[in-house]
Length: 208
Image (cartoon, rainbow, N blue to C red; front, side):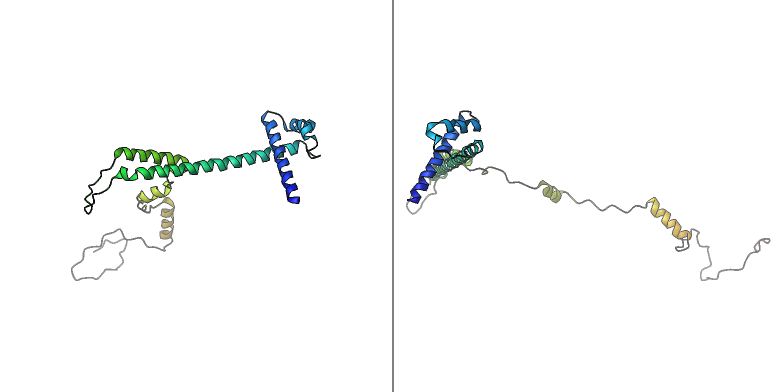
């Protein structure tokens, strides 16, 4: 008994939402819809005591969601039916479109492909793509990775002697930590004689 009463209340709420939605489609505001339904003898005793603008808005939104859900279910049902029909059409002309090879056992000759049937299959595939979202969307490619893979790597730059490096090198040489190479050429000596004359030379006398 309680279950039947709940069912009756659900139907009454559904009917109230449908009425509020109908008045909303006529252009009435939510406050005006609530006032209109409160004055209507049909709804005067069936509305909740707290039925105001906010409750009217909730009724309209819930009815919109219900209609949208039914529409989605109807569209999905029709889409599935259309896809099944396209599959049956494609299957019926598939063999004729691509032909059949010869059968030596039965002596049946080869049947060449039918170009017109192939065009029909192509049209069926194009039609199917409209019912399946994303079927013809190209795959995304990370162009940065592709460019990096095909671009040859640049040769490492040769080190350059900057002004700062040169100044540090001069400081090291001046401090005596690194002896610069001699720029004078060695004197000619007699083959086999390696003696070096270290005798000091007097500034006032010419060397003998």
